[in-house]
Image 1 (cartoon, rainbow, N blue to C red):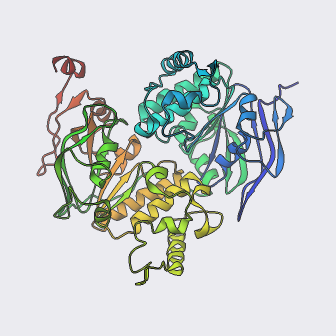
Image 2: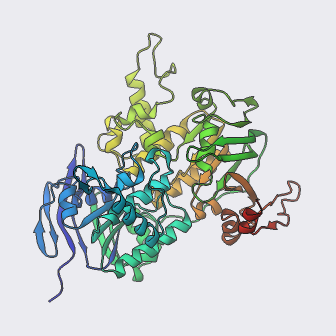
Image 3: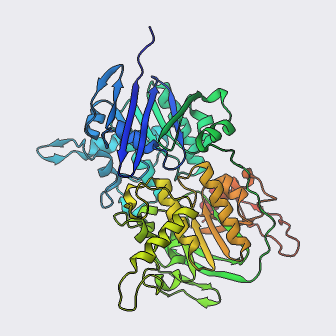
Length: 532
C-alpha cells in the first residue's frame, strides 16, 4: 500500500466578491518532494496556499495531512501541524528587529522576561547552516527587501516545520542568493521535509522541483513530472499560448541627454559609511540603461536619492536640462515615472481602491479634480478601467477592488500601468518584473522597449541576470555604492558581468566612437581592501 500524501488538498473552492479564486482544485504533496505550483498572476496560487496555512477558509473541500482530515482555522493550527510559510508579501513588523520578528509568537520567557540569548544562538546557527546571513539586531524598516526575505525564511526554519510553503521566495533575491536557496531547498528535501514552491520562474522549477501543478484563472490544469516536461510546455499550460522567451528589439538610437547624475553621494541608514559614493553617468532619450549589481550595493539608496525620497550628501541631478537636486518629489514626478522596488511601501495605498491608486500622483490635475476641489469620480473610474484593460490588470471587482485584495502580480501590473501612462521623459523601473509570470514579463519587456523607441529614457535597476543581459542597451555595474564598470550587453558575458558584480573586476569604459570595450583592470578585491 502506498504511503499517504504528506498534504492533500481535495476539491478546494475559495470565493471572493466577484471572483472564484480557487475552483475545485486538488493538490497532492508527497513526502520528501519539492512540488512546484505554477500559474500566471491571479491564477489562485497564493490563495490556495493561504487556505493551507489557515489565513483563509475554503467554502468547499477538505485538507488531509498524512491521510487524515484536518481543520486549519488559523496559522497557529498550521504551525501545530508542522506547516510553515514564507509569504510573498512579508508578514513582518517594521519597527521590530530581525530577531524579534523571527521569534514572534514562539517566544521563550522566564519570569515574564524574554530569553533572547538562546533564540539568538539558534538564529545564528540557522543563518550559518543555510547561508542566510542577517543582522539580528537590525530593524526591518531599515533593511533591504532581500534581507527581509531572508528573515521570512529564517522565521519558518526557526519553528522546525516539516511542510514548507515558499510563496515566490526568489522574487527579491540575487542570482547568487537564488542558487544558494535552491541548494537549501534540496538539502531540506534530503532531510525529509516536503516543500510546496510557488514560482513564475521556469528555470527554478527545472532546477529543483520533482513535480509541478499548474493553475490557470483559478482552475486546475494538470500535474506533470518536471524531468519529462519542457519549459515551453509548462509555459503553454500556464498562459494558454506560446510565449516568446527572447527579447526582440532593434538597436538603440540615443539622442539628447535626459538624465545627468554628477558625483551623487547618498548616506546609509545602516552604517556610518555612505551607501552611494560619487556616482556619475548619463542616460539619453531613446536608450535603456541598466544598473546591475548584487542586492545591497547601493541601488536602493541611489533610487531614493534620484526620486527625492532621500536627500543627497553631495552631487547634482539634472533632468531634461533642469537642476532637480533639491526639488520636491511632486516636482520630480512631473518629469519622471517611478516603478518602485517595494510595491507595498512606496507603490500603493493598500486600503484604497484600485481606481484611486491609479491616480495617486495625478489626482490634483484638472483631468481628475474640479475647480472647486472635488474629485471627478466618473473620470477617475473611466481612466482606471482603461488602464486595467490595456495592461491586463485583473481584479475581482474592477476599479473598486481594494488594492490589498489583489494578487501581487496584478498589484505590480497596476503600478506599471499607472507609471507608463503618465506623461514623462524618464522611466525609472526598479525590479519591474518582480513577481510576474512569463507572459506578463514578456509584456513588460515589450513596454520598456516601446518606451525607448518612443524617445523616452529608461533607467532599469534589476537583479535578474537574464533581464540585465537582454533588455538594456548599456549596463552599469554598481558595487559597494560605486559604478565599477560599463558594459555592452551584446559583447559581454554572464561570467564577466558576475566578476564586476562581485567587485573582482573594474574600470571598464566604452569608447562612444568605436563602441569597443577597452581592456579592463582585474583587481584582487581582498588585496585592495587590505591596502585600504
